[in-house]
Image (cartoon, each protein chain N blue to C red):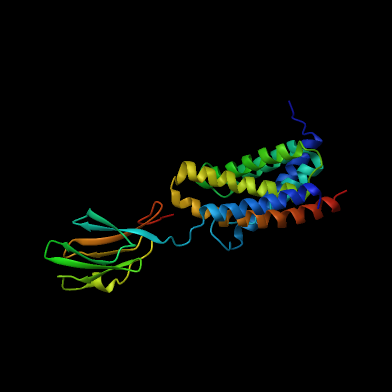
Length: 165
Length: 119
């Protein structure tokens, strides 16, 4: 028996490959603050959401986390768990936001996704790894970074969606 | 940008602003000073008080001065006088100790304080 990949499967595979490539390049770049990354691969998630719907975006996002974890040896490590938590949180929020039908452009989705991503990661880190009040002091600057990068990624994603046929 | 985007952006800025207001306390002022002898808290004093406190340590009396919301060692029977050189303590978490005499002072803030934070 031969599995025939559908057009949808191929599309997900391509988008995921693209996201992993962006993620890898970003991983090499130095980060201004430990724990803060621009999350440029999420541009692909947002573009996928707008072009092909939430299902495709969810596949691309989760496969990217899984494959990224396997590639960089972080699979099932705390880094991986945080990455997954962030991706799941942002997918939940993006799903809820896309139920509101065309109220947002890529910018709105990207900001919502970025804040949810950081929030989900932080909550996981706080709850499972470092349940210390001192952690809370890190939340404001982390969320500031999420907001800024969410906005920037949103602008890139909007440009990308406009360029796509 | 759509109207939805603008609402998201404004709400996100408000959220971040609120987070700073709620969780960002750069350097909390101390409220109380705890005096420890041989590792146990023997007395707590408000930093609003003024005056001197004499504490009996293991080798003799240590004298502490309280003034203007700060506290310091002023006299100690020890040889190194490290405790006196620590100077004024005013911030949440500030700490000075005279190990030979077993006397230490710790400043405590309004909220929980930390000895150390590790990541």
